Amino acid sequence: MKIEGINPHISTRYDRQTMLPQFGEDGQRKLSSARVLLVGVGGLGSPVALYLAGAGVGRIGLIDPDIVSESNLQRQILYKENETGLPKVECAKKRLIELNSTIRVDSYACRFEKDNAKEIASQYDLIIDGCDNFATRYLIDDISVELNIPYIYGSIGEFHGQLSVFNYNGGCRYRDLYPEEDAEQCDSQGINGVLAPVPGIIGTLQAIETIKVITGIGKTLRNRLLMVNMLTMDMVVLDI
Image (cartoon, rainbow, N blue to C red; front, side, top):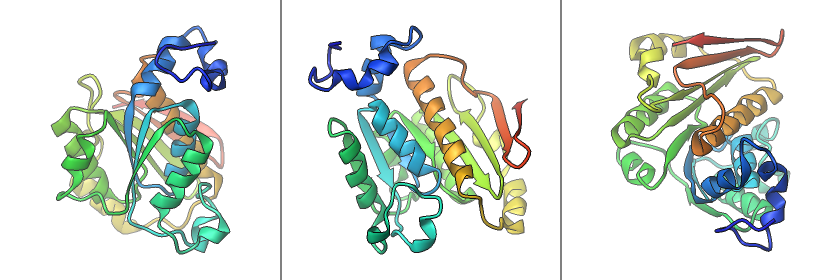
């Protein structure tokens, strides 16, 4: 199957997507032209990046200041043992290009901070949250509002996860769900670890929400919060 705007030599790789009536060739074209920024390439960022690259998102930006460590390997499936000590974004970029050589991957080996956030994010159509702290989430939220681009939110801890889509089509924002003072109180309580597959599940769902926002298919989690308890497999969607 030849899809206009996509290299005909590799277009068959997406056949299992384009055969879906809700997705089709138009959905693949939208993915091919999309630009997404992933803030944090760890437990959440690993499945997000892999699935978006595999699905054919045309440009993926990766921002993370950290290096690969042995303790990452339990849950951060982008990395290998022999990459310990190397910058995460460079290892991740190499892996994604190996998976799909037709896409563009940008790497930023730095923190997402006030000094660089707007300049970097302005190059992309949406921001995906792969971070692990409230301060960065508030900054992502503020920048996405300022640039009027959607924010795909995910967070995990222990056996639990949350997911939502903020700043999308006039919907609510992260600060509507978590006022800063409440979040700081929660943050001070701390989280003791995470079971390895938990970020994989939430990160995969973030990838699905990202694809839905890009292509316009399905119903997103705009103005809704998905909460998952992996120990009991209880899932609830709350209106925000």
